[in-house]
Length: 196
Image (cartoon, rainbow, N blue to C red; front, side, top):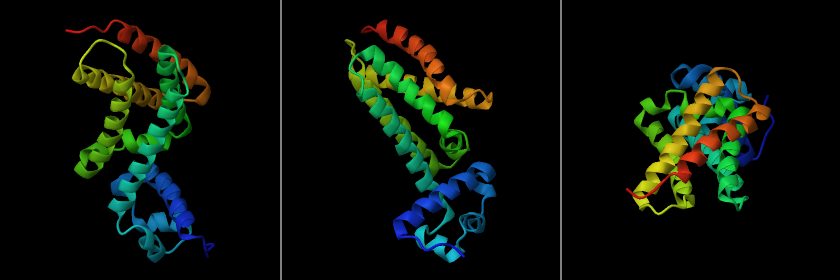
C-alpha cells in the first residue's frame, strides 16, 4: 500500500519514477501499469495526475529540459568574464549530463525527435539555450548570425554529451575537464567571429 502524499509531492514522485521506467523501457515499451507499479500506486492514482502516457512523457521532457536550461543559465550568469561564462556553461551542461544521464537520454537520445509533439519539447529547450547564448555573444554581427552561433554551441554540447555518455566515460569529475576542452574550442571560434 502506498503512503498518502500531498498531490504535488505525489506528482513529483510519479515523474521521478516514470523517468526511470521510460529511460529503461523507452516510450513505446512502457505501459502506465508499469509506472504505477514502480511507484507503488494504482493505475487510477496515476491517471489522477496524468491523463495519458503521452501527457506524462511530455511533462517529463519539459521538466528535464527546464532543469538543464536552469543549470546552464545559472552557471553562466554567475560569471562576469565572457571566457569564464563559456566554460561555466559547458561545465554546467556536462555536470548535468553526468548526474542525470537517464534524463539527458530521455530528452536527446530516446527517439523523442521522431514524434512531432515530443520533438517540439526538445526544440523548445534548444531554442531557449540558443537564445540565451546568442545574447551573450559580444561581436559586431547581426542578430541572425548570433542566433545561428547559439545553435552551433548548443549542438556542440549536445553531440559531445551523446558521445560521452555512449562511451561510458561520463562522470562529474570528468565533466570539468571536458568543459575546459570544449570551451577552448568554442572560445577560439567565438574570438574569430566577424561580420560577413
